[in-house]
Image (cartoon, rainbow, N blue to C red; front, top):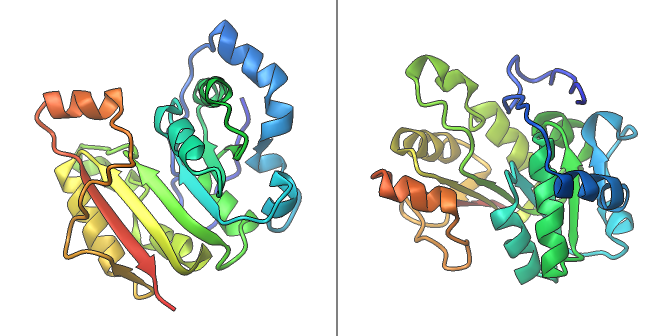
Length: 232
């Protein structure tokens, strides 16, 4: 498993290293599809990624941070063939499953990055180059003493905002009320972003309802969306 370098801007990386074996199908996807679709963050050459060259076409770039097992990511990429969809994830089995899902859906506008989003954004994404960033259901770190480990913090949001083009969007979703309130406060405090709505965004019909979200609802947790826009 690759060892990501510690990001300079903070002392905690934006993920938990997870173990677990891959299924035979996930392993096959890594062996057959990864060379075409994927890159490892720690092995990228210096400087920004040339997304147009990687995809073989210029198109708006959407970056999803933390694609999990790819249930949402594969469907969103399939539904928006006009965009260059990029997913960054640290969980190898998740990336393998995403490749399998994308293959079944015939997705061709998806590229994958294995590693941490902080060094990716800091070192390999040009300023004002992204049409959108999506962070759906990041690790909530529910215990109060662990809140400092949450991804959505002021420095991180400022970094994301700096990579968004004018009018680009930062779309967040979580089923943990306390984290949703933190997201609202942090994003609302970023001077280069404005909330598209008065508080929570209406749940977009185009965002698939995953098994994860259904389970959260069954357990009494309400999912909340936030959509912020980069100011000119």
